[in-house]
Amino acid sequence: MAQSLEITAPSSTARKMSPVARQAVAHYVGLSQTLNQQQDSSSVQTARAHAQGILANAGFPTQRDEAWQYTKLTEFVKTHFTMAGASHITEQDVQKFMPPYPVTKLVFVDGWFSERFSDDLVDLPRGVTIETMRDAESISGGAAALFNHQRAFDVEPFAVLNTALLADGYYLQVARHTCLEQPIFVLYLQTRHDQIANVRNRVIIEENAQITLVEHYASLNTDALATVSGCTNVVNELTLGESAQCHQVIVQTQNHSSYYFNNQFIYQAAKSQFFGFYAGLGSVTSRHQNHLWMNGERVESSQNSACIGRAGQTVDSRTDTQHNQTWGTSRQLHKFVLDDTAIGVFDGMIKVDRLAQKTDGQMDNKNLLLSNAAKMDSKPKLEIYADDVKCSHGSATGQINPEQIFYLQARGIARAQAVHMITQAFLMEPAEAIVHAGVRHWVMDWLTKTLNDSNA
Image 1 (cartoon, rainbow, N blue to C red):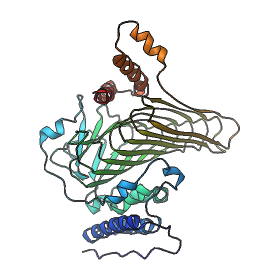
Image 2 (tube, one colour):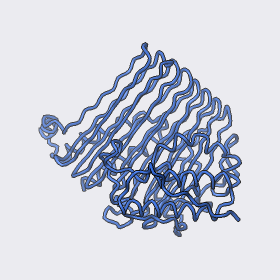
Image 3 (spheres, rainbow, N blue to C red):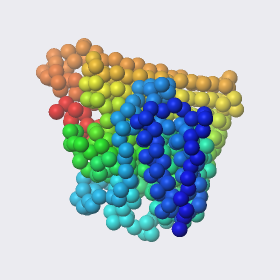
Image 4 (cartoon, rainbow, N blue to C red):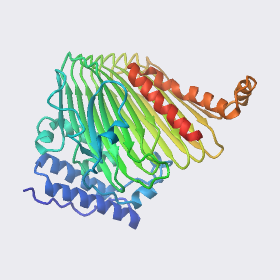
Protein backbone atom coordinates (compact mmCIF):
# COMPACT_ATOMS: atom_id res chain seq x y z
CA MET A 1 0.00 0.00 0.00
CA ALA A 2 1.09 3.56 -0.63
CA GLN A 3 2.28 5.48 2.37
CA SER A 4 0.78 8.79 3.43
CA LEU A 5 2.55 11.80 1.99
CA GLU A 6 2.79 14.82 4.26
CA ILE A 7 3.24 18.30 2.91
CA THR A 8 5.49 20.84 4.53
CA ALA A 9 4.04 23.75 6.41
CA PRO A 10 3.38 26.91 4.42
CA SER A 11 6.61 28.77 3.70
CA SER A 12 7.43 32.27 4.82
CA THR A 13 6.47 33.48 1.35
CA ALA A 14 2.94 32.05 1.61
CA ARG A 15 0.18 34.56 1.00
CA LYS A 16 -1.88 35.75 3.92
CA MET A 17 -5.25 34.06 4.18
CA SER A 18 -8.36 34.58 6.23
CA PRO A 19 -9.26 31.86 8.73
CA VAL A 20 -12.07 30.73 6.40
CA ALA A 21 -9.69 30.47 3.44
CA ARG A 22 -7.10 28.63 5.53
CA GLN A 23 -9.75 26.10 6.60
CA ALA A 24 -10.71 25.54 2.97
CA VAL A 25 -7.10 24.95 1.98
CA ALA A 26 -6.60 22.53 4.87
CA HIS A 27 -9.75 20.67 3.83
CA TYR A 28 -8.63 20.11 0.23
CA VAL A 29 -5.06 19.28 1.21
CA GLY A 30 -6.54 16.69 3.58
CA LEU A 31 -8.68 15.26 0.76
CA SER A 32 -5.60 15.04 -1.42
CA GLN A 33 -3.60 13.23 1.26
CA THR A 34 -6.45 10.77 1.74
CA LEU A 35 -6.41 10.04 -1.99
CA ASN A 36 -2.67 9.45 -1.83
CA GLN A 37 -3.19 6.84 0.86
CA GLN A 38 -5.50 4.98 -1.51
CA GLN A 39 -3.42 5.32 -4.68
CA ASP A 40 -0.44 3.09 -5.49
CA SER A 41 0.94 5.02 -8.47
CA SER A 42 4.04 6.98 -7.48
CA SER A 43 3.68 9.40 -10.40
CA VAL A 44 0.18 10.36 -9.28
CA GLN A 45 1.28 10.64 -5.65
CA THR A 46 4.14 12.92 -6.64
CA ALA A 47 1.88 15.15 -8.73
CA ARG A 48 -0.67 15.40 -5.92
CA ALA A 49 2.00 16.18 -3.32
CA HIS A 50 3.42 18.88 -5.61
CA ALA A 51 -0.02 20.47 -5.90
CA GLN A 52 -0.57 20.21 -2.14
CA GLY A 53 2.47 22.40 -1.55
CA ILE A 54 1.32 25.04 -4.03
CA LEU A 55 -2.21 25.03 -2.62
CA ALA A 56 -0.95 25.37 0.96
CA ASN A 57 1.18 28.40 0.04
CA ALA A 58 -1.00 30.15 -2.53
CA GLY A 59 -4.50 29.25 -1.36
CA PHE A 60 -7.46 30.43 -3.41
CA PRO A 61 -7.55 33.75 -5.26
CA THR A 62 -9.45 36.73 -3.90
CA GLN A 63 -10.77 39.91 -5.47
CA ARG A 64 -7.40 41.48 -4.73
CA ASP A 65 -6.04 39.34 -7.56
CA GLU A 66 -6.65 41.23 -10.80
CA ALA A 67 -7.66 38.11 -12.72
CA TRP A 68 -10.36 37.37 -10.12
CA GLN A 69 -11.56 40.89 -9.42
CA TYR A 70 -15.05 40.27 -10.79
CA THR A 71 -15.36 36.55 -10.07
CA LYS A 72 -16.02 36.14 -6.37
CA LEU A 73 -15.14 32.89 -4.61
CA THR A 74 -16.45 33.84 -1.18
CA GLU A 75 -19.25 31.27 -1.08
CA PHE A 76 -17.14 28.61 -2.78
CA VAL A 77 -14.45 28.91 -0.11
CA LYS A 78 -17.06 28.55 2.64
CA THR A 79 -18.34 25.29 1.16
CA HIS A 80 -16.06 22.32 1.80
CA PHE A 81 -16.92 20.00 -1.07
CA THR A 82 -16.42 16.27 -0.61
CA MET A 83 -15.47 13.43 -2.97
CA ALA A 84 -17.98 10.71 -2.16
CA GLY A 85 -18.94 8.00 -4.61
CA ALA A 86 -21.33 8.48 -7.48
CA SER A 87 -25.08 8.49 -6.91
CA HIS A 88 -27.37 5.81 -8.27
CA ILE A 89 -28.99 7.00 -11.50
CA THR A 90 -31.02 5.37 -14.23
CA GLU A 91 -30.73 5.10 -17.99
CA GLN A 92 -33.66 7.49 -18.21
CA ASP A 93 -31.67 10.08 -16.25
CA VAL A 94 -28.84 9.86 -18.77
CA GLN A 95 -31.11 9.96 -21.81
CA LYS A 96 -32.44 13.38 -20.77
CA PHE A 97 -29.11 14.88 -21.77
CA MET A 98 -28.16 12.80 -24.78
CA PRO A 99 -28.05 14.55 -28.16
CA PRO A 100 -30.32 13.47 -31.04
CA TYR A 101 -27.47 12.32 -33.29
CA PRO A 102 -25.22 9.21 -33.26
CA VAL A 103 -22.26 9.45 -30.86
CA THR A 104 -19.66 7.40 -29.04
CA LYS A 105 -20.67 8.00 -25.42
CA LEU A 106 -18.68 8.47 -22.20
CA VAL A 107 -20.53 9.24 -18.97
CA PHE A 108 -19.18 10.60 -15.68
CA VAL A 109 -21.45 10.75 -12.64
CA ASP A 110 -20.38 13.10 -9.85
CA GLY A 111 -16.84 13.00 -11.23
CA TRP A 112 -16.55 9.21 -11.55
CA PHE A 113 -16.50 7.30 -14.81
CA SER A 114 -19.60 5.15 -15.28
CA GLU A 115 -18.90 1.97 -17.19
CA ARG A 116 -22.58 1.07 -17.02
CA PHE A 117 -23.80 4.10 -18.98
CA SER A 118 -20.80 4.54 -21.28
CA ASP A 119 -20.18 2.73 -24.54
CA ASP A 120 -17.85 -0.25 -24.48
CA LEU A 121 -14.30 1.13 -24.55
CA VAL A 122 -13.10 -2.04 -26.28
CA ASP A 123 -15.54 -1.83 -29.18
CA LEU A 124 -14.41 1.52 -30.56
CA PRO A 125 -13.86 2.76 -34.12
CA ARG A 126 -10.56 1.68 -35.62
CA GLY A 127 -7.70 4.00 -34.69
CA VAL A 128 -9.35 5.23 -31.47
CA THR A 129 -8.10 4.38 -27.98
CA ILE A 130 -9.92 5.44 -24.82
CA GLU A 131 -8.76 4.53 -21.33
CA THR A 132 -10.25 5.59 -18.03
CA MET A 133 -7.88 7.42 -15.72
CA ARG A 134 -9.16 5.76 -12.58
CA ASP A 135 -6.58 3.01 -12.25
CA ALA A 136 -3.00 4.05 -11.64
CA GLU A 137 -1.57 1.92 -14.43
CA SER A 138 -3.49 3.89 -17.06
CA ILE A 139 -2.31 7.19 -15.65
CA SER A 140 1.34 6.28 -15.26
CA GLY A 141 1.38 4.14 -18.43
CA GLY A 142 -0.58 5.22 -21.48
CA ALA A 143 -1.16 8.71 -20.15
CA ALA A 144 2.28 9.41 -18.74
CA ALA A 145 2.33 12.69 -20.68
CA LEU A 146 -0.42 13.90 -18.34
CA PHE A 147 2.21 15.68 -16.28
CA ASN A 148 4.46 16.91 -19.10
CA HIS A 149 3.11 20.45 -18.92
CA GLN A 150 2.64 20.67 -15.16
CA ARG A 151 4.34 24.06 -14.95
CA ALA A 152 1.65 25.55 -17.15
CA PHE A 153 -0.99 24.14 -14.82
CA ASP A 154 0.68 25.53 -11.71
CA VAL A 155 -0.27 29.14 -12.49
CA GLU A 156 -4.01 28.40 -12.46
CA PRO A 157 -5.46 27.90 -8.95
CA PHE A 158 -8.16 25.45 -10.01
CA ALA A 159 -5.77 23.50 -12.20
CA VAL A 160 -3.63 23.11 -9.07
CA LEU A 161 -6.70 21.95 -7.13
CA ASN A 162 -7.47 19.54 -9.97
CA THR A 163 -4.03 17.96 -9.67
CA ALA A 164 -4.29 17.77 -5.89
CA LEU A 165 -7.58 15.88 -6.17
CA LEU A 166 -6.71 13.84 -9.27
CA ALA A 167 -8.86 10.72 -9.20
CA ASP A 168 -10.63 10.07 -12.50
CA GLY A 169 -10.94 11.14 -16.12
CA TYR A 170 -10.16 9.71 -19.52
CA TYR A 171 -7.29 9.35 -21.97
CA LEU A 172 -8.25 9.57 -25.65
CA GLN A 173 -5.86 8.93 -28.53
CA VAL A 174 -6.75 9.16 -32.22
CA ALA A 175 -4.21 7.45 -34.47
CA ARG A 176 -2.68 9.23 -37.45
CA HIS A 177 -4.80 9.45 -40.61
CA THR A 178 -7.93 8.48 -38.63
CA CYS A 179 -11.05 10.47 -39.47
CA LEU A 180 -13.92 10.06 -37.00
CA GLU A 181 -17.25 10.99 -38.58
CA GLN A 182 -19.20 10.19 -35.40
CA PRO A 183 -18.59 12.61 -32.50
CA ILE A 184 -17.20 11.53 -29.15
CA PHE A 185 -19.78 12.71 -26.59
CA VAL A 186 -18.82 13.10 -22.93
CA LEU A 187 -21.59 13.70 -20.37
CA TYR A 188 -20.64 14.99 -16.91
CA LEU A 189 -23.70 14.57 -14.74
CA GLN A 190 -23.83 16.25 -11.35
CA THR A 191 -26.28 14.76 -8.82
CA ARG A 192 -24.89 15.16 -5.31
CA HIS A 193 -25.07 18.07 -2.89
CA ASP A 194 -21.66 19.45 -1.80
CA GLN A 195 -19.76 17.07 -4.10
CA ILE A 196 -16.74 18.16 -6.14
CA ALA A 197 -16.47 16.36 -9.47
CA ASN A 198 -12.76 16.59 -10.19
CA VAL A 199 -11.81 15.23 -13.62
CA ARG A 200 -8.53 15.28 -15.61
CA ASN A 201 -8.62 14.42 -19.31
CA ARG A 202 -5.91 14.02 -21.93
CA VAL A 203 -6.63 14.00 -25.69
CA ILE A 204 -3.97 13.24 -28.31
CA ILE A 205 -4.89 13.71 -31.97
CA GLU A 206 -2.08 12.43 -34.13
CA GLU A 207 -0.93 13.55 -37.58
CA ASN A 208 -3.73 14.08 -40.12
CA ALA A 209 -6.38 12.75 -37.72
CA GLN A 210 -9.79 14.40 -37.33
CA ILE A 211 -12.23 14.34 -34.44
CA THR A 212 -15.36 16.06 -33.14
CA LEU A 213 -15.43 16.16 -29.33
CA VAL A 214 -18.65 17.25 -27.59
CA GLU A 215 -18.86 17.74 -23.82
CA HIS A 216 -21.99 18.44 -21.81
CA TYR A 217 -21.83 19.48 -18.15
CA ALA A 218 -25.26 19.13 -16.55
CA SER A 219 -27.09 18.72 -13.24
CA LEU A 220 -29.70 16.01 -12.81
CA ASN A 221 -31.90 18.45 -10.90
CA THR A 222 -32.32 21.39 -13.28
CA ASP A 223 -34.73 23.36 -11.09
CA ALA A 224 -33.30 26.88 -10.84
CA LEU A 225 -34.29 27.03 -7.15
CA ALA A 226 -32.85 23.65 -6.21
CA THR A 227 -30.34 23.40 -3.38
CA VAL A 228 -27.85 21.26 -5.29
CA SER A 229 -24.56 23.12 -4.94
CA GLY A 230 -22.04 20.76 -6.41
CA CYS A 231 -18.80 21.80 -8.05
CA THR A 232 -17.25 20.61 -11.31
CA ASN A 233 -13.51 21.21 -11.69
CA VAL A 234 -11.96 19.99 -14.93
CA VAL A 235 -8.61 20.13 -16.70
CA ASN A 236 -8.58 19.17 -20.37
CA GLU A 237 -5.28 18.81 -22.17
CA LEU A 238 -5.45 18.53 -25.96
CA THR A 239 -2.47 17.93 -28.23
CA LEU A 240 -2.91 18.23 -32.00
CA GLY A 241 -0.30 16.69 -34.28
CA GLU A 242 0.72 18.04 -37.67
CA SER A 243 -2.29 18.68 -39.94
CA ALA A 244 -4.64 17.30 -37.25
CA GLN A 245 -8.12 18.74 -36.90
CA CYS A 246 -10.24 19.02 -33.75
CA HIS A 247 -13.77 20.37 -33.46
CA GLN A 248 -14.61 20.80 -29.78
CA VAL A 249 -18.00 21.88 -28.44
CA ILE A 250 -18.68 22.38 -24.73
CA VAL A 251 -22.16 23.08 -23.33
CA GLN A 252 -22.47 23.90 -19.64
CA THR A 253 -26.03 23.82 -18.27
CA GLN A 254 -25.46 23.01 -14.60
CA ASN A 255 -27.89 23.91 -11.85
CA HIS A 256 -27.84 27.59 -10.89
CA SER A 257 -26.59 26.68 -7.41
CA SER A 258 -23.51 24.90 -8.76
CA TYR A 259 -19.93 25.90 -9.56
CA TYR A 260 -18.04 25.20 -12.77
CA PHE A 261 -14.31 25.62 -13.42
CA ASN A 262 -12.62 24.37 -16.58
CA ASN A 263 -9.01 24.95 -17.61
CA GLN A 264 -8.11 23.78 -21.10
CA PHE A 265 -4.50 23.51 -22.29
CA ILE A 266 -4.31 23.14 -26.07
CA TYR A 267 -1.11 22.54 -28.06
CA GLN A 268 -1.07 22.77 -31.86
CA ALA A 269 1.59 21.50 -34.26
CA ALA A 270 2.16 22.78 -37.81
CA LYS A 271 -0.89 23.05 -40.11
CA SER A 272 -3.25 21.80 -37.41
CA GLN A 273 -6.72 23.24 -36.93
CA PHE A 274 -8.62 23.73 -33.67
CA PHE A 275 -12.23 24.89 -33.71
CA GLY A 276 -13.65 25.43 -30.24
CA PHE A 277 -17.06 26.57 -29.02
CA TYR A 278 -18.26 27.08 -25.44
CA ALA A 279 -21.82 27.73 -24.24
CA GLY A 280 -21.92 28.98 -20.65
CA LEU A 281 -25.57 28.70 -19.60
CA GLY A 282 -25.64 27.44 -16.00
CA SER A 283 -23.97 27.55 -12.55
CA VAL A 284 -24.01 30.38 -10.03
CA THR A 285 -20.29 30.90 -10.75
CA SER A 286 -18.61 29.57 -13.88
CA ARG A 287 -15.13 30.16 -15.27
CA HIS A 288 -14.04 28.62 -18.56
CA GLN A 289 -10.47 29.20 -19.77
CA ASN A 290 -8.65 28.21 -22.95
CA HIS A 291 -4.85 28.34 -22.87
CA LEU A 292 -3.82 27.78 -26.49
CA TRP A 293 -0.32 27.49 -27.93
CA MET A 294 -0.06 27.72 -31.74
CA ASN A 295 3.38 26.13 -31.92
CA GLY A 296 3.73 25.31 -35.63
CA GLU A 297 3.61 27.13 -38.94
CA ARG A 298 0.27 27.75 -40.69
CA VAL A 299 -1.76 26.83 -37.63
CA GLU A 300 -5.44 27.80 -37.50
CA SER A 301 -7.65 28.25 -34.46
CA SER A 302 -11.18 29.41 -33.75
CA GLN A 303 -12.52 30.02 -30.24
CA ASN A 304 -16.12 31.17 -29.97
CA SER A 305 -18.47 31.37 -27.02
CA ALA A 306 -22.09 32.22 -26.26
CA CYS A 307 -22.98 32.88 -22.62
CA ILE A 308 -26.21 33.67 -20.83
CA GLY A 309 -26.41 35.02 -17.29
CA ARG A 310 -29.33 36.00 -15.09
CA ALA A 311 -30.26 36.44 -11.43
CA GLY A 312 -27.03 36.33 -9.40
CA GLN A 313 -24.93 34.36 -11.89
CA THR A 314 -21.30 35.19 -12.67
CA VAL A 315 -20.31 33.99 -16.14
CA ASP A 316 -16.56 34.15 -16.82
CA SER A 317 -15.02 33.15 -20.18
CA ARG A 318 -11.31 33.59 -20.98
CA THR A 319 -8.84 32.85 -23.74
CA ASP A 320 -5.05 33.10 -23.86
CA THR A 321 -3.82 32.53 -27.43
CA GLN A 322 -0.10 32.31 -28.14
CA HIS A 323 1.03 32.72 -31.77
CA ASN A 324 4.53 31.23 -31.78
CA GLN A 325 5.27 30.56 -35.49
CA THR A 326 4.68 32.14 -38.90
CA TRP A 327 1.42 32.30 -40.85
CA GLY A 328 -0.83 31.57 -37.89
CA THR A 329 -4.52 32.48 -38.14
CA SER A 330 -6.85 32.84 -35.17
CA ARG A 331 -10.46 33.95 -34.94
CA GLN A 332 -12.59 34.62 -31.86
CA LEU A 333 -16.16 35.77 -31.33
CA HIS A 334 -17.55 35.89 -27.80
CA LYS A 335 -21.10 37.03 -27.02
CA PHE A 336 -22.80 37.49 -23.64
CA VAL A 337 -26.46 38.10 -22.84
CA LEU A 338 -26.94 39.31 -19.26
CA ASP A 339 -30.18 39.93 -17.38
CA ASP A 340 -31.21 40.79 -13.82
CA THR A 341 -28.09 41.20 -11.63
CA ALA A 342 -25.84 38.87 -13.62
CA ILE A 343 -22.15 39.61 -14.02
CA GLY A 344 -20.27 38.74 -17.20
CA VAL A 345 -16.51 38.57 -17.52
CA PHE A 346 -14.48 38.22 -20.70
CA ASP A 347 -10.70 38.31 -20.69
CA GLY A 348 -8.90 37.54 -23.94
CA MET A 349 -5.23 37.75 -24.87
CA ILE A 350 -3.61 37.35 -28.28
CA LYS A 351 0.17 37.23 -27.90
CA VAL A 352 2.37 37.22 -30.99
CA ASP A 353 5.94 35.99 -30.58
CA ARG A 354 8.75 37.73 -32.47
CA LEU A 355 9.05 34.60 -34.68
CA ALA A 356 5.35 34.66 -35.58
CA GLN A 357 5.50 36.87 -38.66
CA LYS A 358 2.46 36.94 -40.98
CA THR A 359 0.13 36.33 -38.04
CA ASP A 360 -3.54 37.11 -38.64
CA GLY A 361 -5.48 37.34 -35.38
CA GLN A 362 -8.95 38.71 -34.70
CA MET A 363 -10.87 38.80 -31.43
CA ASP A 364 -14.33 40.33 -30.88
CA ASN A 365 -16.45 40.51 -27.75
CA LYS A 366 -20.04 41.76 -27.97
CA ASN A 367 -22.39 41.94 -25.02
CA LEU A 368 -26.10 42.59 -24.63
CA LEU A 369 -27.46 43.85 -21.30
CA LEU A 370 -31.17 43.26 -20.75
CA SER A 371 -31.20 44.92 -17.33
CA ASN A 372 -29.80 48.11 -15.86
CA ALA A 373 -28.44 46.04 -12.96
CA ALA A 374 -26.45 43.62 -15.15
CA LYS A 375 -22.70 44.23 -15.43
CA MET A 376 -20.04 43.27 -17.96
CA ASP A 377 -16.27 43.43 -17.55
CA SER A 378 -14.43 43.01 -20.85
CA LYS A 379 -10.66 42.98 -21.39
CA PRO A 380 -9.57 42.06 -24.92
CA LYS A 381 -5.79 42.40 -25.19
CA LEU A 382 -3.01 42.26 -27.77
CA GLU A 383 0.69 41.74 -27.07
CA ILE A 384 2.72 41.84 -30.29
CA TYR A 385 6.48 41.32 -30.71
CA ALA A 386 6.53 40.76 -34.50
CA ASP A 387 6.39 43.56 -37.07
CA ASP A 388 4.56 41.92 -40.00
CA VAL A 389 1.18 40.98 -38.56
CA LYS A 390 -2.51 41.75 -38.95
CA CYS A 391 -4.25 41.73 -35.57
CA SER A 392 -7.38 43.34 -34.21
CA HIS A 393 -9.49 43.21 -31.09
CA GLY A 394 -12.63 44.92 -29.98
CA SER A 395 -15.44 44.98 -27.47
CA ALA A 396 -18.92 46.51 -27.42
CA THR A 397 -21.49 46.42 -24.63
CA GLY A 398 -24.95 47.91 -24.70
CA GLN A 399 -28.69 47.43 -24.56
CA ILE A 400 -31.16 46.72 -27.36
CA ASN A 401 -31.76 49.68 -29.64
CA PRO A 402 -35.32 50.92 -28.95
CA GLU A 403 -35.78 51.50 -32.68
CA GLN A 404 -35.34 47.77 -33.32
CA ILE A 405 -38.09 46.98 -30.83
CA PHE A 406 -40.34 49.68 -32.31
CA TYR A 407 -39.80 48.26 -35.81
CA LEU A 408 -41.05 44.83 -34.75
CA GLN A 409 -43.91 46.24 -32.63
CA ALA A 410 -45.08 48.23 -35.64
CA ARG A 411 -45.54 44.90 -37.41
CA GLY A 412 -47.79 43.48 -34.72
CA ILE A 413 -45.17 41.71 -32.58
CA ALA A 414 -45.53 42.10 -28.81
CA ARG A 415 -42.69 43.87 -27.03
CA ALA A 416 -41.61 40.80 -25.01
CA GLN A 417 -41.50 38.67 -28.13
CA ALA A 418 -39.59 41.38 -30.00
CA VAL A 419 -36.94 41.50 -27.29
CA HIS A 420 -36.69 37.72 -27.37
CA MET A 421 -36.28 37.60 -31.16
CA ILE A 422 -33.55 40.25 -31.16
CA THR A 423 -31.73 38.57 -28.29
CA GLN A 424 -31.87 35.14 -29.90
CA ALA A 425 -30.57 36.44 -33.23
CA PHE A 426 -27.72 38.21 -31.42
CA LEU A 427 -26.68 35.14 -29.45
CA MET A 428 -26.73 32.52 -32.20
CA GLU A 429 -23.91 33.96 -34.31
CA PRO A 430 -20.97 32.27 -32.49
CA ALA A 431 -22.66 28.86 -32.81
CA GLU A 432 -23.11 29.19 -36.57
CA ALA A 433 -19.44 28.28 -37.05
CA ILE A 434 -20.00 24.73 -35.70
CA VAL A 435 -19.40 22.48 -38.71
CA HIS A 436 -21.29 19.34 -37.66
CA ALA A 437 -24.94 20.08 -38.48
CA GLY A 438 -26.35 17.81 -35.76
CA VAL A 439 -24.13 19.36 -33.08
CA ARG A 440 -24.89 22.89 -34.30
CA HIS A 441 -28.67 22.40 -34.12
CA TRP A 442 -28.37 20.71 -30.71
CA VAL A 443 -26.35 23.66 -29.35
CA MET A 444 -28.80 26.18 -30.76
CA ASP A 445 -31.65 24.28 -29.14
CA TRP A 446 -29.94 24.61 -25.75
CA LEU A 447 -29.37 28.34 -26.32
CA THR A 448 -33.02 28.79 -27.27
CA LYS A 449 -34.24 26.73 -24.31
CA THR A 450 -32.14 28.75 -21.88
CA LEU A 451 -33.44 32.04 -23.30
CA ASN A 452 -37.00 30.76 -23.10
CA ASP A 453 -36.51 29.69 -19.47
CA SER A 454 -35.09 33.12 -18.69
CA ASN A 455 -38.19 34.80 -20.09
CA ALA A 456 -40.60 32.44 -18.31
